[in-house]
Length: 475
Image (cartoon, rainbow, N blue to C red; front, side):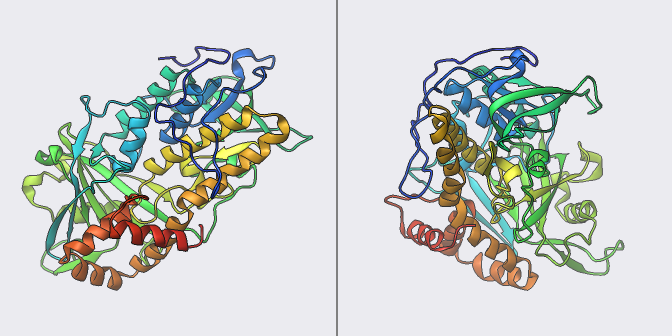
């Protein structure tokens, strides 16, 4: 692994990813699979401070982008403000969509540290329903759980092993913009210590292109005037960990109803809390327990989310161990930017990937799989663009947002409608009470919510879902 501060200058000749995938840049067109760039690397006087591509943020979006770029032979500088391992607020669960991306990166998902799961256990309406992951030609038939503390470190390591130059403790403060063209030609960054405090002088890093994988707030996007859209949903996720005998559960568990005592006495009856919950065993002795609530709920921003979590888990069976004595981490929360809530995803030399581009699935709050898919697409587009002369680069780069809309735009539009509906607790109760007793309907629902279908030779459910996403206007 290339450690922070170690330079690996110049391009490397490496094969394209083994799967040879060629993402579409728009309906009916395609990008050629990651050729080596034409022309020399444009290093400035800063030497190893410069690169072909700078990726800002080494979470799943940034690390995956850097991995695929480095595999294509480009010189990549991956800048991360913290250091690994580090924690992130997340459910830690990965559906088969994310597993597919890990396999594409050559990650051994049978190695120690991964816990496999068979599917989704849904709890609600007095029922428990087990829904196995569908058997599809396009995706593996299993999901995974691994804490973000380990997961993010593993992906950053993969990027460095592929040749990306990872620099931790590097806080990017803004883009460098060419005054003549208005294009981003680099970033300004400064070293920081473990607490994020300034630890050195600001330096300029130059590149032919920059990828913003800098999270929900995305300082780079904001600096270019790419702001969040108010017509896209947002959610808040709250989670913690408990020592629990359920740590090795081989099902991901989703709660559609969150019940709690109406008052502290326990004699005032029960009340239905807003939102949905999850319980995912991590395999290391703890369970990840959390809840989410969307901004379409009347309670959004008006309740104490941490108190909601405590009240809900207090109703779970005592033998599960979800109590304050067994809690091993603080209760933390994070925003979930959904449905492409920041656009355009390419502008003036800057590409947005992951939370920076609002790539969380509105149906279920998943973000990692879509971040990794967008990362692979962005890397493919960048490698293609940088292999061409200047006149052809911009046309190829504009294909990135077009390809994202083609791939996920219609589906995310359906997700926005879904989020508006479930914001009304009455509709959620009706859906739970009438849907869960019907296994065939729930099989369809699982495929829809997890976005798991075959586009060729799929079953009737696949054909219906695929048709709906094609007919819906792109987000």
